[in-house]
Image 1 (cartoon, helix red, strand yellow):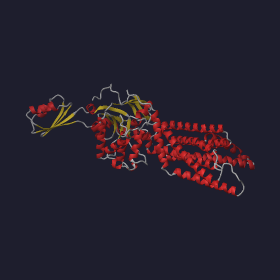
Image 2 (cartoon, chains in turn brown, cyan):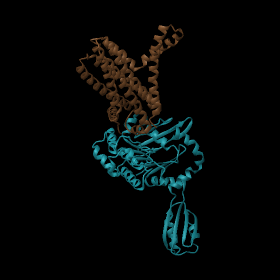
Image 3 (cartoon, chains in turn purple, yellow):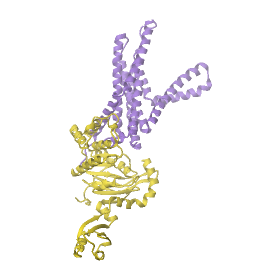
Length: 280
Length: 327
């Protein structure tokens, strides 16, 4: 009986193949460039405001003017690559190419890891480009640019890996492209609604003594605490906060939690994909 | 080559392979064996469970019970390594929207780790007459061309076993000839082929052994001769004489193995249990007759197939359609 070769090489090879093919598709689509342009446009607007404030004499120095634009880019870019990741899996399943791929030597983990890596590399490219533009803008405007941005950008890689993992899990749970899109956008809307709702109720109940909304406010606070645990974006905010306070131990903790989050969701996606299968 | 040698390690072996959806059994305790170097024709009417079986074989559907072995290795534990030795063409050809035929084959050549990929790809494109279209987007190919492209993809890494689900559907007669030629080449190279098809004449022409599946059960398995002899043991001889001979029919009916003789002018129709061509010829000659032509008519695969499955046609339509949807 012929001995079969061990699978380690094959697994890495398959992951790399999926990753390269996905990255190629990503780079040839306009979405990534549109998202980056949007983030840069918002950054320009924010910096214009910052410069306006300085010129009007209200302030001479603003603390880290590039942090907010970078966080905006991290969230926008992260959500974009996560959305594209979830759609790429469901589209491949719907078009049947996933079935063809799985005639070959590939496991569910290899495939999903390839997807995660490709989208993370695309996100990394966006972040590097954004940081380079920030560098040029800082040189032009003489605004403060510190290594804090690198810490936030580094952390955002881990939180985006977690976002992509979550997105892949959604893709493995929902069979159709439309269903996946609705689930992903619905999740974002719910999280945003919870946060806006909580912020609004906290200010209204506090200022106008509307006691009938206290229960609702407390419920939203409780739900938001849960969201803070399950939302990769909240790890980005908490890690950024730690970096601003120069609490590097805490920063590392959020970095590792986000990475673990990405691995766990990736495994959940693989288990679910195995259970549901790759057939159309 | 003997296909009955039970000691030969099977390329595919299924043991009580079963798939059911919501309690409805689509494939029922399937036990089949494909031997090295043979073309195994897997036949069955629509909804018999052929595609479900193939999907279980290649690991796209988990069986409800039973298991599959490839090359003596359990498929559930070593599927990734086994898939490296398989070339699979599914019922439908799925291609990447943004890839040309050449890019598609390059992607899979690298995926399977094919050495000398460019040479191998060009060989296959030439062989299947797809070379002029190599730079066209694969999604713009006709159904038949996509089928040939899928076959090229399955052959890239020179697999030990080809699993083909309806490989000639959608192909024109030239395409069918090309595919047939490729399959014969693969067999000559010692590769086994598991061929599922509705086109009985194609299977009859190419397969060494066949298995007939109906309602998820393997009704019969064996070489064409074995299947024919089990189901339709009679052979019909049509003999044309130079001139009619009085009393010849009676003489022929006395031959051992002859079931029935009819005579119309110079033409005799003789139904026999075995091949009695020599004895019939001798009898005619001894009666002073001269044979102008003799034609032996064996039952075709279509006859065998219809005979095996006709009793269950009515029952089939409802049950299996649901299984297919679930699959």
